[in-house]
Image (tube, rainbow, N blue to C red; front, side):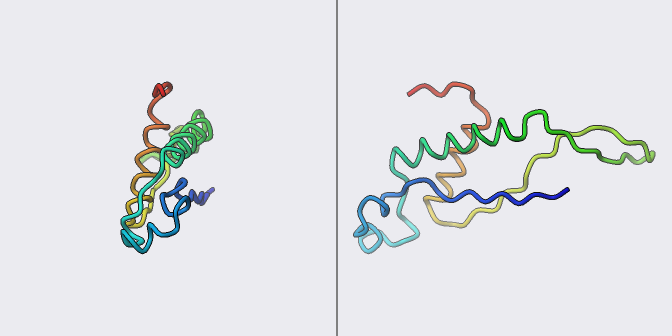
Length: 99
């Protein structure tokens, strides 16, 4: 079964100060510290969501084995979306990032 999960970028500098879009250009607006924490939290959520989830996958021999299925990720070229992906990856791969 295919699933599509959408994750919006974390809080951006433009969410806090709308003038940042004009000053920096929309593509260059990054995440705030809160946005980074939101991205890491999303990664931790996904870690729990995918952990232990197994799907059946056929082998060349026609036998069925269990395999973990991880998602394909699509991200725009905007800085805040790339930063969000980085935070999500940190949340997926770390149990304790500290402060």
